Amino acid sequence: MRRINRCVCTLVTLGMFGATAPSYAAEANPYPFKQGYPTPAASQHVRADEVLQRAIVAYRFWYPTVSVEGIFNGNRAVGIEDGKQWGIAAAGPKQVGFTLNSDTPYGSAVLDLSGGPVLIDLPPGPFIGLVNDHNQGWVADLGLPGPDAGKGGKHLVLPPGYQGKVPDKSEGYFVSRSPSLKNLLAVRSMPVGGDVPKAMAAFEAIKIQRWTPQGVTGPALQVVDTTKLPLDSSSLKWEDNFQFWQKLDKITQEEPLQPAFLPMYGLLAELGIQKGKPFAPDAHMKDVLSRAARLGRDQMLVSAFDSQRPEIKNWPDRHWEWVGLVPGAAQFETPAGVDLDARDRWFAQAIVTSPAMFRRDAGAGSLYWLSARDSQGVYLDGGKQYTLTVPQPVPGKLFWSVTLYDAQTRSQVQTDQDKAALRSLFELKDIDTTKPVVLSFGPNPPKGDASHWIKTVPGRGWFAYFRIYGPEAAAFDKSWKPGDIVRQ
Image (cartoon, rainbow, N blue to C red; front, side, top):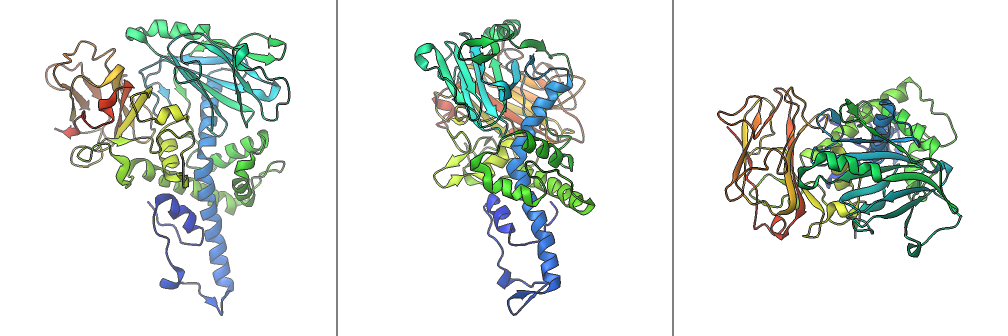
């Protein structure tokens, strides 16, 4: 990654990586101060460097906000209107989105609270759902990990500043307040027994409607099946260029300011993004902000794929890593504060947050491990052949899967095979669970049986997620472990 000139703000940026900040007294300064005061050359140099560094810090902090706008935009691009429709899909490689998987069908909706509260009437069933605000902050869990525990319930989301009547749990409501007007509802329908059509049909019973103290009003959002549509719900097109800041400015103008983020709004104001004012950077500032987007994205990818944190591996002799680094946290909070490196790592790879997603115990709904390297520690290459040996049985009450993702798009690998996952409910449903199963990855099928093979693309790096749904104790106490991905 390109070297960035050092300045005082580097203290913040390097702090995200846990590195030691440089000492100005210990290094030669090409623009020295005179008697404690900056010379004109020093002032010019520091100011230019300061703007770039502050823009990088702002980029990394606000990345989740722009990322969730990518999800909203993906639905809108295929004709799904906010407040009128919501999309469902049995996701596959055509569905571009950060580490989306083919294990369970997805449903997603933009909840627009500008017109008042919205009610999500969730029927009983094997649903896993959540609501996140416009900054990907956690608002509520629904379904199996939520307060209804899979028994169904009326989940009411209130807008910021709502002062009206609030129903309580005795009336059958689970109430949450959002700090933003636009929110993301994401629901997964579990394909019990591998029955995907039944899981897709189950979405039809979910009702999303405007709510008033007198009851629901207006029609429920219409369900739109996007399974066969190429859909991009990512922020890839914006993340490394000036468009990132244009999208962020639009969101800043539309959403109320969140008190907890006031210092970061101040940082945006220094860059020209301020609520109620036009964003009109000159050519030089556009260039600085474009550079900051590229550098900020690069720094986040280092956190995602080259973390040096010692606790990242569940097994010291394997290259499988924990994706979520702060167990049980909703927003990567720790006793010492927010773990910004863990936050960067997650949002560079994935979307949405919930404390239920990062639990590390046998009561967790699921767990995720990442591997971007082979058994020798070399990054995985789409032009090479690999195998992965998975001991059986995998310690999961429900099912498990291995999914391959393109390192550049962080989305499922796209090939003419149109397959990116090997799943115990589908491709692996007939394996002998008393013997290890060998999975194959590479541009060419293995000799013999190719049913347990995922095709990769030469010239493109990839990484794998190992998921277990309903994980059991052996998945956490190290008494069970998968093999490494081995180059052939």
